[in-house]
Length: 187
Length: 175
Image (cartoon, rainbow over the protein chains, first blue to last red):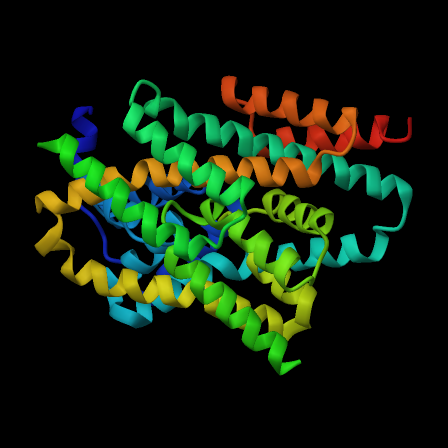
């Protein structure tokens, strides 16, 4: 951290309109990962939060179910303007991406019979699968060398990808088990 | 029609509440319900819709309104979006007001650490399920392999990686 950063530590509270437009811009900017953009928007550009406040809220959002960035929008909106702020933030975040994705969906439906378009979408889907494989590798890497964690990964993988068991029941069994393992190892 | 909307509401509310580790963790369950249980779309169509959602900007759960719209038009879009985003948001609203009280508790750290392998297993399952549904030729297998390598080991932008896959599919798909 430079001296300039510490000097500019002041934050400014957004109004509801600001929350909406801030997250609207974020929804339009972020591809694949909105989170780095979110930090830039909230901490550096608009100065709603200090860096440590952002990290702290991110910890909460990762703890909760749902997408991190969705939870972040809700938590930030809530922090400044209660449920109205939360509503403005989440609506801002998903409005534009929803409109765009529906336009893309309409184009897909209209032209999917065309062989060229079919090849294009097949390639796109294969690349989207590639991104997921890379993501799986990234989340798995810190667990290599931890046999208990890898056993949990293997059980879930077989249950969900191979046996195609319902997620809810699988989670009700495996999640407490994993927390129990984590508790045993933390002592 | 209303039975379809109720099914959409039930499926996405359930997914909203168990999406620990974000949207990609619940992709296999979404595919199982939408493709195998409800038969709303084929597994190839599901992969295409997922890829479309990845190619659009914004949070990575944009496949949800897309499926709702595909299945039941505008009402489907609204029902699936509210079902997916409202329950987890209500929890977030509630949790943020309690966060000061449980942030530093030991159980919070233990639970959070315990959920890491759960998320990893679910994301690995997502990768497998989507790959199996998307890859049905050597060309597509090569695209998935190359894009996975690029994304894992270089700083290539996700949109550039998706574009590369689409162009490769278009250029070589006819052979």
